[in-house]
Length: 105
Image 1 (cartoon, rainbow, N blue to C red):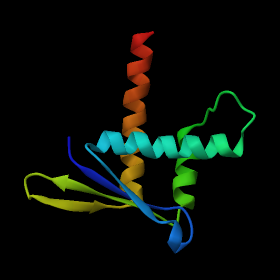
Image 2 (cartoon, helix red, strand yellow):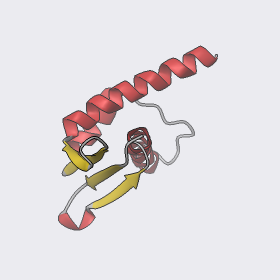
Image 3 (cartoon, rainbow, N blue to C red):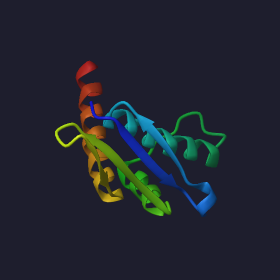
């Protein structure tokens, strides 16, 4: 559980914001939630939103900036990570969540 700060800029400079989370997994889940919210806004008539990871990654690539800083306990500092690293971690996170869900059914 490493404290994580997500730096998010979907468009022009004034759209930039940040969020902080108690763990990297919480941050990854929230990034997915942001995309799902974006899909719901674009498709207000749909009751169920589905997407695959390539669509999520296309959305993340369309952002002006996406990066994060994760607290490293051993060094007592935050380490910066770029968009590609976040995408790798999201892929692993979603794969783990999918296997949890399939084992529960």
